Amino acid sequence: MIKALIFDLDNTLLRSDKSLSAYSRGVLGKCRERGLRVFAASARPERTIREFGVFEEFEALVTLNGARVVLPGRVLLNSIPAKTGEIIVSRLLGIPGAVVSAEMSGGIFASVPIPEWNAVAWGSFPALPEGELYKILVSGIDKTDAQAAVTEDTYFTAIEGGKLYQFMSRAAAKWHGIQELLSAFGLTPEEAAYFGDDWDDLEPVRACGLGVAMANAIPEVKAVADVIAGHCDEDGAARFVEEKIL
Image (tube, rainbow, N blue to C red; front, top):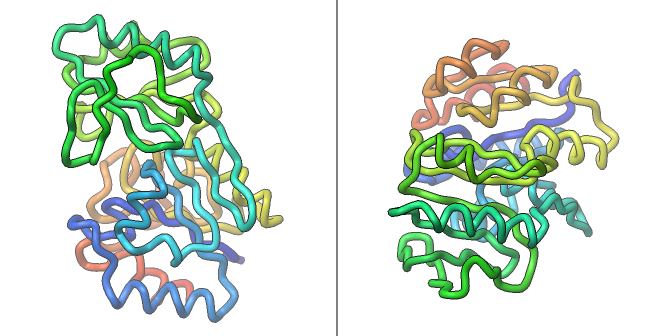
C-alpha cells in the first residue's frame, strides 16, 4: 500500500514555468488530509524552492540532489569536503571559457557575475567561502573536461541538455537522499510512489513501489516506470494522484 508520495519538482510537480497550480495544491492538501506523507526530491537548493512558494507543501525534502535532506527538526548533510572542492575548482578554472560556481550553505558564488542565479562574484577561487559546499556547477566545458576534473570522492552529471555540469559528493545522490528520508519516517521504498522526468529520477522511479514518469519525461525514465502520467503543464502528477491513489 502506498503511504508516501515523493515528487521531483522541475517539469514534474511544477509546470514548466516553475509554478504550482491551485489544482495541484488542492490535491496535495487532500493527500495530507488522508494521511499520506508528501515529500519532494529536487536538485534545487531550499532557497529557490522557497522562492517558488512550495517549500511548505512538503513534510520533508531531499534538496540539492541529496546534499541536504531536510527533515522535521534536523538536516542530514552529504556535502563535498572543502579540500576536494578546491581541487575540482582549480582544475575547472584551468579550462579556457569555463564559468564555475559553488553552491554553498551561504548562497551561490561564481567566478563571474550570474544575475539570473543571484550569484555572488567570488574572486578568491579556488579558495572557497566559509561554509558547507553542496555542489559545484560549471558551463563552457565538455564531458571530457568534466571527467578530467572529477575526484575519487565525487561524481558529475550533465544537466540542461549538456550545457551545464554539476559535481557532487558520491554520498549526495538523489536516491541515497530519498532512502535516508524514508528511513527517518520508518517507511520502505515499496511504500512510496515516486514521480519524475529526468536522469536523476531513474533510480527512484525504478526502485520505489510505484514509479511514475511524466509524459514529458526523457525516454529512459519512461522505460523504467510502472506508469506514465500526463504532462507537467497539464498537472499530470496531481491528476494521477487524484484519479489513481486517493
